[in-house]
Image (cartoon, rainbow, N blue to C red; front, side, top):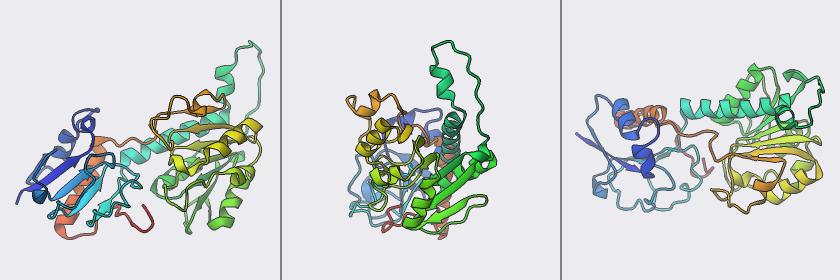
Length: 312
């Protein structure tokens, strides 16, 4: 039987990037009889390869479909879709995970080594300084899902003093793992650098606010490659203006692209990056999609199945 796989995402992922999705999925699904296209009669579709910014928002006509296979790690824009009655998976793959690890590690090291001081110096003054070793730098990872754990393990490998916080109890080798409201306070009070890697759920929105920012050491740093709504923007700007937070590197925002008149663009202590920390790479993402199709056809559990109640 031929499997009809509907591609429901923006056109550039279909034809562009380093390797078009058509080529990557064809390679990953080698040996399986399938048809991959951007249009089918809805009742003939078996699987939907999906991005939440797709024009497809009503899943009701897709009566034969067995699963929606999301191309993004984030699923907050689809979990509440009441027309979606079939299993939904989110993207967790080698390329996305390691892209995030490399991006976060680079910015943690940038702050740890004080590289901005050297890059922006214009006064021609020779001022040697002694940097602390990684073991003397406290980093808190807020969110210990697949990405958070991978980042925490990488920073532990570099010798950093790493704490991790999650809403439920977790265990990661070499990481001081905390959970619950008391655990969040404990993680933040020693966090010289805080990395936000939580999903966007009602329970995590505005977790970085005036109260939690005040719990951090004065002059701490914020790195957010997770989700824009994790931060109360007004509170962060106030903390930056007061010096409570020395600098913030932000990759995600409540509105994207970030509006040209947003205060983050002009703030001297904010670095804006255009949602690039963990891009989906077609070659590695296709391997995960192909494996989930194989599992579904074999009656095996899907990988990275979304819990609609938890929102991820």
